[in-house]
Length: 614
Image (cartoon, rainbow, N blue to C red; front, side, top):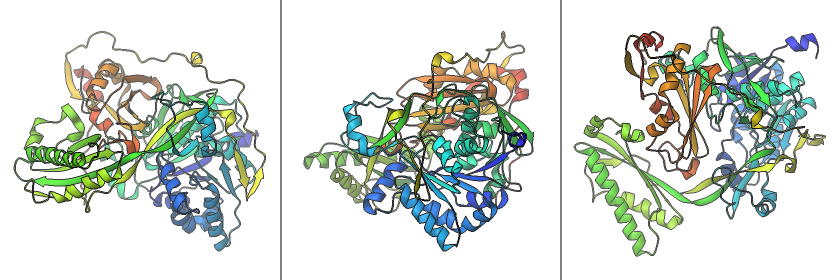
């Protein structure tokens, strides 16, 4: 690479974190971001099965229509004028239809754009072959369910780079790892090779920060008062990337949000497992030594990612139909509301189960009752005084193998309106809706069995994935540890909530939840290690967790990552937890009391004055 190329900076804007994210993100980044690339992530694990059902009803459906109709259609002339290249996994389960719809929009606008597709993730045509190989769920070890709805391998970034190498202006993919849209652009721009593991890990990290949109620029931030004034016009993330792998995270000028060490670190720890072995199709990433350094207003420099050879297998996310579910919401107000709510939910369920038995149906096999307004998410940590609440919403979630059983439940929710508790009104719109449960079955497949196809303007281009010379070996990893306090505290100790000492963010991976905790100051880190043991954190979540707890150390970020196994009641649409994705778990952990030396209070948070909100 020439010296000019080595010094070049590529600006990539992250415009979507999920299907339904605001179209304003793309508009802001295009008009204000001075970007070279615009990348989108639309595909949560359950989204694929939703798109499969959509395609079954309408053959030309099955992709993220928002991408074409709400985002690209109004912005395409400006994107073309500015020479911005676009990469999106909006293709879902109908990549060709997405590309065709976008080409039609471009043609109507009189624009000449080269549109590429990356396919090969859909393995439904090989399900019986895989069943014959007795593939097993990665977590539970269970066999493949009888009938799958979808099965998609997580592809990497090199096919995207190949499409860009062939002159594509827009690249549309199906299922790929979320960070691949960013990494693919960087492989193309800087000529990174499969053996450039450190650079690939750095590019993956940049993509990991961008893939959740405004969560990388102060959205969902622990210290929300630092950001609230900018919520109406949140800035969206931009990564300024260098050929060395280093990059700066920022946002468009004169927008809301916050880019700081703590806000960006929260996004780095989001939905991680082992941060020392973050397995991707192109590289195994080690983020334990990553540092985030503030280098200007709303600018941080991110460095220190290490890379190792990729794993031998690719992850496949499959979905299957696992019965039905329904949810009812009823508001109860006035006197004795907790007792009335408990009595109402118990009586309703007893009534429904009796009626099911009389009709020859099995009882409801999975039930969850939540009293919203009574700290229902907190388990044993709920405050006693909430029992005196004068208003709660009773949320009852149920599952059953038969739709008829839940139709009966739905009718009885409204049918007992005059026969049970006083002071009630509906908390929803009409009778509960019965919907299918789409469960996940995640397994591994040998990467050599996944055939990837890349087309540009409908013509296939030559692409052969490079088979790694070696695969990830955990013995390659070196130990990285955070020290414990050196001796007893001088001057006495105090007990404070964890939020005074750290920020945190939580998320989900299947049935597991993670909570990443970042110290507010380096001096606090040893004391946090002493206080936040895996055992204590596991006990704190005893009301939801059914597996073990692992603690991983991230010295570079001044952070710990806790992985709570089997803490989401199956996760996704299988779960009847009110918080089925663990999004509130960080706030729950931040309430934990922690003992520190009184002298350490100098490093605790400084609460800013309250912001007036109109």
